[in-house]
Length: 215
Image (cartoon, rainbow, N blue to C red; front, side, top):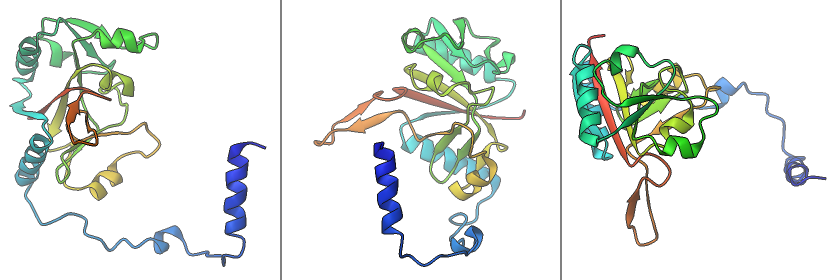
């Protein structure tokens, strides 16, 4: 008998005398909580997203679709990245002005190979204004989860306002729960018992978020 079987057996025994409850899940869970805190215009929601991203120590940029390739080029140049990792479905125009060597993620790419890349550029699934959170779901513009965790520098493009939602409940309505979801609030960081903050432990040390409008 496996450890799993032992644990599940204990759970069944503990619940043996519990009365059955056939209440549908939709009725059993109280959904009367606030959908979002306050009422904001679309522009105010985007501003809140930018504010909360910055509060989590992400670096926030704003641009339009026409200037996006030049902005990405400048960010990569400032970083000094000789190579940049891109997912398979990244719009080619985003990298049209960039000089670094493009590295395409492949199934054979190991963590060691990905660690040698200077930066990664991706899109996102959604961005949540109230929490300053970027949601990735492994879509064509984002690629596999590992490519956004191993490189030390991540540039993430968010289309505004289409990919911006006000709250977590609003985000949950738009994402597919069976996809490989990654929720990012700022660069990777942790603190030890003395509260010494260390960044880049289990993800990028630097997160740059580009809010792009107009396309």
